[in-house]
Image (tube, rainbow, N blue to C red; front, side):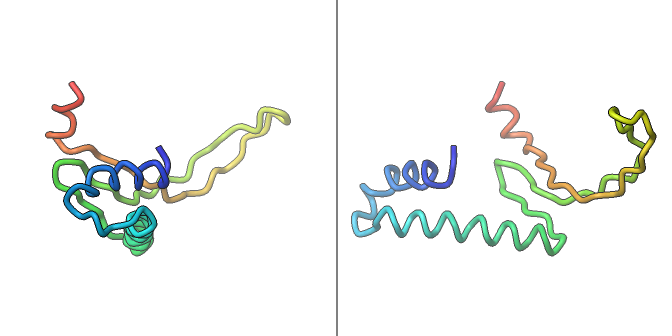
Length: 95
């Protein structure tokens, strides 16, 4: 599901209770939401959504890798990755 599809689903859910809200407004809210999440993660903050889970940035340690073409050992530098940890209630729903 992409941002456009997500915003359409949200629009379908809210159009009965908020008929003055347009699809474009909902899409813009979704885009802003993801910008805020991205900024928080770039600042090193955790993003916790109750009942859903936590997004956080972790640093992967540097390690040795292999260049398969040349058969040489290479050094892979440390890097930062975004990690999602689902909440316990989210895991229960999935079972």
